[in-house]
Length: 169
Length: 155
Image (cartoon, rainbow over all chains, first blue to last red; front, side, top):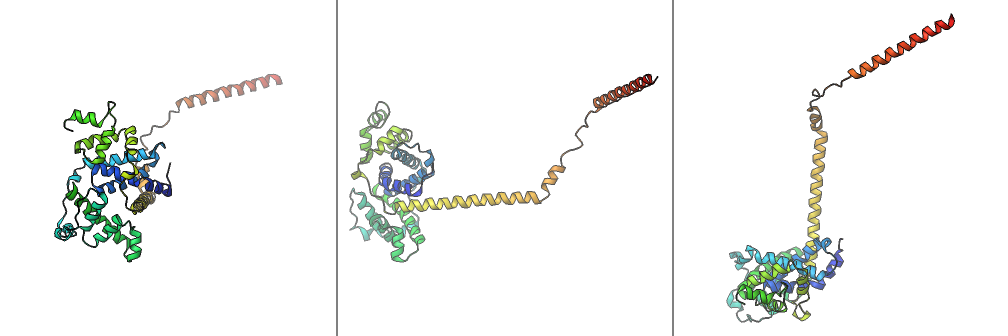
């Protein structure tokens, strides 16, 4: 049984928040959770023929749990150091002390961490995670290439994952 | 939650499934790393608990997803399909090239000629020969008998 891309896109929209939340509950890191949630949907799309057709939500949850299990047992998870080059992509601590409000609210945490990045990663991260602007829309409005923005987002996520560990774990 | 037995009693019921308490602890982030792994190990194998966990979150408890989340996954699916197609095309091309090399080179002739034809024993025809001799003797006798009968009739 092969699923159509449109049908699967509906499933993503329906369950994206649940799967990110489940992954966040286990990993306690929003950016790792978002990454694992993506892996979950990709695995679900690939293995859709294995789905027995009873409870898609539970099946998806089980895939997410397996992804989290692999993540939790992975030795790579404990490596959270940035290279010197990557550290240069972060704002100096002093420049954002006044902005750092430690709240137990995920959106606030995401916003605070995005503000710690230097340009061009800061704008891409804030637009994507905080202002809900899609990369394709950013490309249209700024005239930048989509590929460039995808690369900036990829690097931002890498930095944000490590920053989250340093700040909140 | 100190001690393995106590932890197990709180996180799992008498049948070994997740409890309301375990979902609550998971939500408020109060589980230790080894407790989290215990839950993950169980839920990854248990249909009932994966359904229980999936239904364990209210809409108000869900974190937001970036608006480009779905697009990112669709791009990755598209990219993966393209890669699979390229990989398939490369495999087919290599197989076709190898087939052409085998057909147009002398490989097949060499394989056929390298078989030892001399090793095959000739068929044993002695029985066939003896049957042929018997049949020809018998037919000669019939001819002789016919000739003898013919001469008798003339007399």
